[in-house]
Image 1: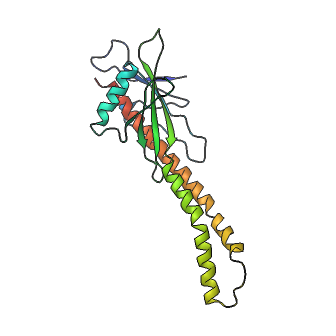
Image 2: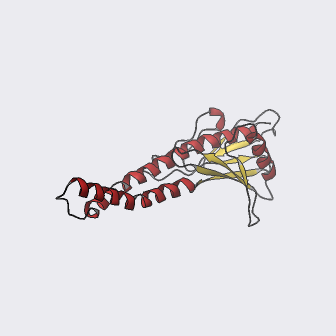
Image 3: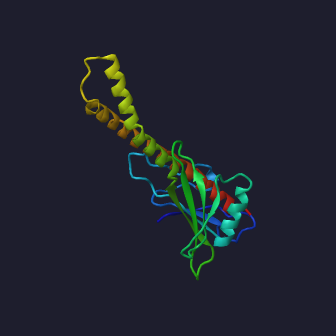
Length: 207
C-alpha cells in the first residue's frame, strides 16, 4: 500500500507528519494540493473512500471537527451515538443532488504501540427521499390508471379495452430512468465526499 504524506505543519512533531492521506487502492492527492480524489464513473465499481492518519487522539479529532462545524466548514455535522461501546463517530452531509448521503467519520486509535488515530469514512444513504420517491411512484399508479381509463372512455366511445394492459408496461418503463437517476446521485455524493475528506484532512493538520 502506498502512502502519501503531507509535509509537516509548523509546530507539529519533528519528522512526523501531523496527518497523512492513505491511498486505497489508487493514489490520491494530499489535501494541500486542493484537488479531490478521482471518482469512478457510476457504471463501474466505486473506488473505496480514502482514510486519514492524524497525530491527534480520537477525542481530539471529534472535538476539532465539532468546533469547525460551528464555523460553517462542515455541513450537517452531528455526533453519532455508538451503542456498542465502540469509538466515537460523527457524520456530515455529502450532497448528491436528488438523494443526499451521510459521510460517516470514524476515528480509530492506531494501537498501544502507536500514537495518533486513523480516520475511516463511509457513505450511508439518507433514506427519507428515496422512500418518498418510491411511495409517490407506487401510489400514483392506481389514480393515474383510473383517470386515464375514465378520460379515454368518455372521449372515445369505441374504447372498450382494459387500460391496465398497456398502462402498466408504460409505467414500468420509467423504472430504469429512476435507477439511472439514483446511480448518478450516488456518484455526485462520492465526489462531494472526496472534497469533504480533503477539507477534513486540512482541518486536522492545522494547529
